[in-house]
Image 1 (cartoon, rainbow, N blue to C red):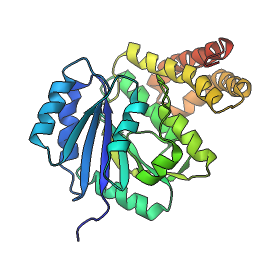
Image 2 (cartoon, rainbow, N blue to C red; image 1 turned 180 degrees about the vertical axis):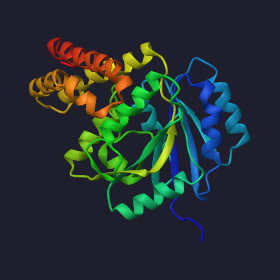
Image 3 (cartoon, rainbow, N blue to C red; image 1 turned 90 degrees about the vertical axis):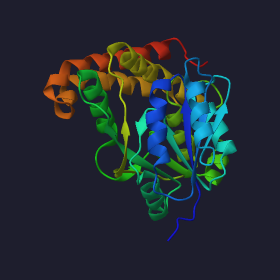
Length: 287
């Protein structure tokens, strides 16, 4: 029996030309029969435009490319959602590799959940070095390994109807260095919408492998959290105090949640995160 609900896969990309062919190959190999792929080039300055143009020329019946002025992944995904022809939007990242049954399983998960949003799990592309292993374990600490309702979902495997996405207002139109997904999920939660996470449906994810970009990402997460709280009129004082207390307790809980050989790396990353959050709070980020 043919699948009937049309799905629009939306991939925002910026300067990831070296990963695009691998990503597109996996998305083009989906067993689901009714879907389109929309790449939104967020003003890339590498070879991404030429790579995407070649993909579009070869797969014009399935794959489309939009090009927008660089504004971050949130506004780029909004552009993709606006152009989508599918009833369901399936958002993923440009550094993922999808199993051939990914779309089919995500649709089944969505239809069985009776929730506004469903999010799938993730598996690492590589665990060859300590940075990759740390980042994967960090994601596991956040989301766990059981199906459950969550307050915020990653954008690696995120499904919502086009109608609900439009009703939510989409992603923040301001440029955020991190957390555009979290900001969207907070607003969806305020509406009383339910987000269901199920790691049994997964996608493969590339993690950063070097200290500098990984630490920058953690630092941005810490700082932007304050800005997002202020956007939502949240009380950032208690939020910052919680972050400090969490860091002070981290020598204990890291022992339980991370492998022993990652202990000092995890501790160092928690210090980076907490320091960025406190600094953002004291500087009045986003005022």
